Image (cartoon, rainbow, N blue to C red; front, side, top):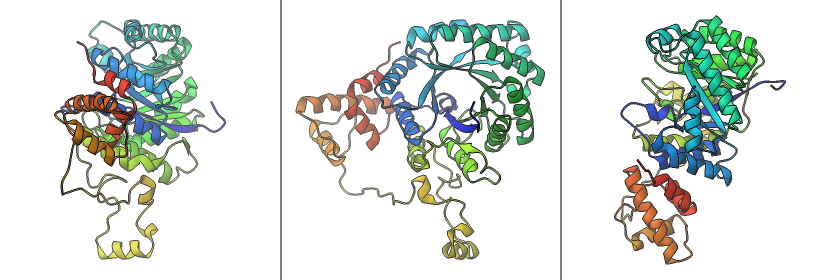
Length: 412
């Protein structure tokens, strides 16, 4: 705890965002998002599922990037079910894991109709506590405990659950509005009572089923801060996520920075909005999902003025019709697309075309052997992504070829 609590961002694009139905990210794309999130000053990335075998090499490779300082100071956390078995399995595959979130359902609805008699309210708490203690025994430095469906959980039981998590050694409690059914009013009231009772930092994890996801996230963070606790808002880039999505990363940051009555609340000072344009455009390309033209801060129309009154007012003083500057989000440069001759890299590229592409992005190789090694990895990366690589991906592969090789390798 600090004298003045803060609001931090935990981005869950690489865990909840990739659970969006019918779309996915490659392991290289997930890695690039972690790099962008780190550059943006985001506190933590929930970077995947340590018990899922196809994630193993990617998770270990990203922890290696963290170890050498390429992914620092961002924390890379894994999502696990709150069972001792999941914790043990996770550390069998991903030994270097230092940050985890352990999740279990807490509502009467879920306990009765999801667990179907396998667990009751007390055994839910027992399983969770065993998992927390096992994670601590294995050397986890930061343990978050997730109350899935917290918004439909009886408050008395939710507080009992959270207090038990604290007793077992948890460092944070994640309040999950799993169905997006809270409103800013209920969110504030419930989280304030929870934070006052448990006296731990509160993570706010909201879904957008009623279109209230950003408002709920901000209300929950305010409640935790007002109770004297740090708040951690869970976000996804471009609001990706299951069903109607999660809280949009950029919208949440803008709401904290520019929303009325939010100035007394302190956002993590490491946040760099300048990266917003790049990360959102990359995520849109990687997911294959266009950014809506009316997306806050990032959409094509976010700073567009056409009506006479608005255009006149904006030209006189941009503050007449703009809350914040487009330059703050890294916007402003024209996007130029070559329409003449283009040499691209792909799964069938040759060495001359490949060298030409890397010359253009000012990456030099010490000899032909190094160039041939990177070319082979670039070929694999194109198969891996199933789309042309962007400049930052090409630079990453050239800079970290051994780590890239691990990311592209999967074993059944």
